[in-house]
Length: 323
Length: 314
Image 1 (cartoon, rainbow over the protein chains, first blue to last red):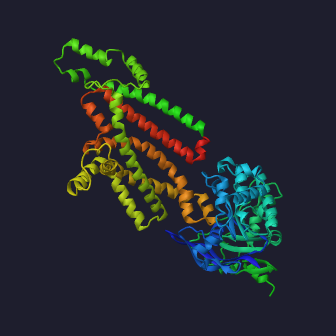
Image 2: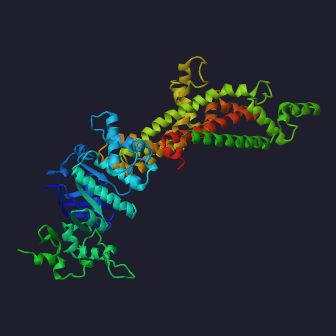
Image 3: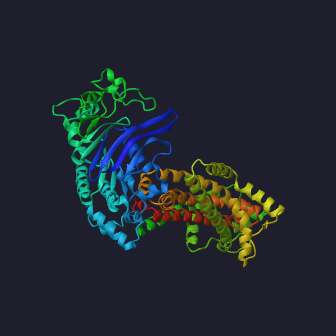
């Protein structure tokens, strides 16, 4: 069963130019006990998607339609109080910039104790649990470190603390929004490894957002590729990375510096720009930049099955689809 | 923490020395000769010379400044030219009145201003926020002496709710408090608006920061986020402004003390300037300077207590 099951989710932002349709009919799943990655370039709606999941959206955002089913129950129909009860217990988050994640004038210990406010434990027990969590993510001398302030930690350490905080309540779903983007490459590897180990230990599902293909390939079991507010391809990491079905995924993989074998002067790019999300094109969202577009692309493609558990929103796949 | 406080106190001492030296020079540059003012135009040269010698005005300026500092450290600010009473005694007798007035003013205006600022930030763009905004800007624009005069006319003369003049009977706390209401209203009113605007802006800035999003993502109660997490940070610039604001309050107190005929430093300064009573001018302005330096120092120390980054010098 999927921990998180998003169906036909559409979200738009009210702007002076009109409604900016940031997400359109997004359908995706996070299976239990698995790590699911979302990959896509800036502005593809990754962040809008996660803010819609935990319902912490910008004031001008509006959910048009769809469902966000968490353990079978639609989160969009929950009250704000019911949502708050879920945040930090069942669903927790790790954010992108570790330098901004913690309150700068409160000690790390105080912040880690505060988020346990629901538990009927003594303060000493809460403190003990915070110490254990810090030790678990590899912070040396955690007992003493609890009395320090965020500015006394490095970026990598702060991100570990953020992960410790997110996992403290043993959530069913951890959402990580580009948690390693602000860190350097060595730290990135460390954090990814630790996250993988902790996921094994705690057994939660993880929704991991990144624009870094290598990290997704390393860490995730399944991957969802997003482009301009739509899901264009989804499947296991193996299928999607070795046998990409959507022209956008192929282009994205070709542009990844890690994939380039031949020496080249200029790094490859995908020509063109993301379409204007206020006035959308009628057909396929990627048609303008696609190198294999043809007549059918004037109509919007639906998700078609490339192979079992591997789907892409492309007319070429729909044609080949085994009936 | 201790090293921060020591460093800060050292800086304050340096500022005080510089301020006093400047003050001494400024007073000597004011046109008008104290000896002529005191003795009148028909005084004999011998009498003038005697008075000049008594006031120390016959010595070179650097010597006068040096002597002043030496005496100041001993708590001796000279003698009142007219009554021959020690200036220290005169000034210190007036300090409590002014100090109570500005402390009460800043206290009520800070409490109300911070509350209104938080309300505005939490209910951003609501009717209440807009109303608070308009009222804040209006009261900021009204000078303290205008509020003094009108509150005197309305609440003391017309409605007779509060006394019009004086500071109340010396031993009667209730009476003194009753006498404080209108003057502290006059001085504090514009500060309510100013602090409300400041707190609103800095709360909105803090509420948009990443750590507030984290706190929400952990489901912390909104009350705790607003007052425990956001206000703890948003209050820092306000503390600094209040510290500096004590200086403005001291000058606002001058008008108010005159309008309400309250004893106090402001009234003392005006009275002694008009009579060219140099030692008293010097003494009362000196004490005002000390109050100002002390309040900014205190504000910085409070900020260091609230913000560990300042303590660490980051």
